[in-house]
Amino acid sequence: MSVICHPCQLKTRYEDHSPSLGHHWPLIVCCNPATSSQECLTPCKADQLSFTSSSPIIHREGTFTDFLAQQHLARAQSGSSNSAVASQPFIDYYDDFYLGDIGLGTPYQNFTIVLDTGSSNLWVIDAACTTTACKGDPRSGYKKHQFDTTKSTTFVKTSQPFILFYGSGECRGYISTDVLNLAGLVYPTQGFGVSTSIASVFGQQPMDGILGLGWPALAVDGVVPPIQNLLDQLDQPIFTVWLDRHVKPAEDKLGGLITYGGLDSENCDAQVDYVTLSSKTYWQFPINGFSIGSYSSNTKAEVISDTGTSWIGAPAAAVQGIVKATGAKFDFRNELYTVPCTGSYPDMIFTIGGKAYNIPSSEYVLDLELGKGNCALTLFEENGGGFGPSWTLGDTWIRTYCQIHDVGQGRIGFARAHHSEI
Image (cartoon, rainbow, N blue to C red; front, side, top):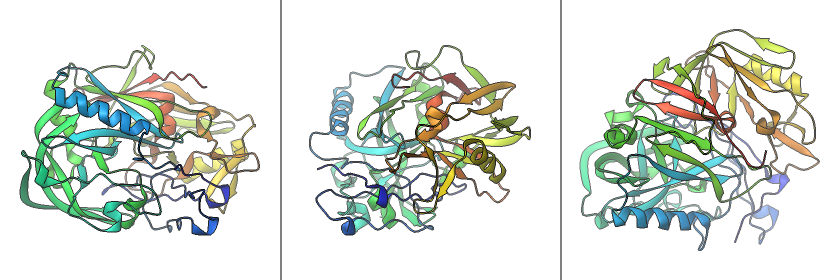
């Protein structure tokens, strides 16, 4: 049974998901149509971690997600894929949340995880954990895939504990090694966290864990990130992210592609412009300025590209400039900025390496079925307190420009993304 979002239940919160910096996802609370509105999930409080969007039951029988999982699993078990360029699809939930599949263990156990360029650790949930969060909150409809360590003949447990702190609690367990299959690329002794305890809010999310695609310096406990371990297998030491855009809210749909070892020439322009990273922790780089309408700032600022952030996090002054340029109003019920869906709005323009990158309103105005003809601005205020990057360029930015993560040369490239619906 699918889940339908009703405007009166839409709630958005932004909190940390990374141990070092805040990265943010909106949470859109949904209702089962078979229940009354009073039986909906209780929205997360402001201090809780929330990073999903309205979505269906992710593992219900016959879904596109399960089909893709079976395809990846069959491909991995057949041993037919030794390609130096490999790709896997993203599953899109309301242009707001993107998931991918991985295999762990021997034989492979399949997991649906967040492919996150804003962190560097891999973790999944231990089958021995029986809490509501580990099993999946039954009110959410999300059933978790948990890692059964006893069923993997290649599993090795270490004595090293791990703990990751989040805005609403923590994720803790122990470090282990096992075979990882990522889009057909196999590494036999990948280090990862087996979570024996997770924050309760994870039980409301349509994911079984996180696979960090950030740099080793960001990894907790010195665990080598998967992408670093796979570099020797790749044709080029790069990976490319393309995220698609659906005009109307969509659930459980093909939402993009991540390509390991090469460019995505089908979904991205051939012209790629690179900028050298200013920090090899996050995918961090400088911008020379930002403008929208009559608002303009030529102040150099540090930003990060983050697939694990749904929207764009901006400094307070830029947020106010965007609000003024678009005439946006703050919706206190849903705690987000809204504009009429049918309005005409100026481009956001980022200047990077002397080149202007425009984000049209078709990307930053999102129809979340708020009602009364209103759409959401995919924008939130970054609260870094003066520490770390000033901007977080999430999926709104990434949908507009493919991100070419050049691990070998320590740089990131941008190419105009192709979409069929806008």
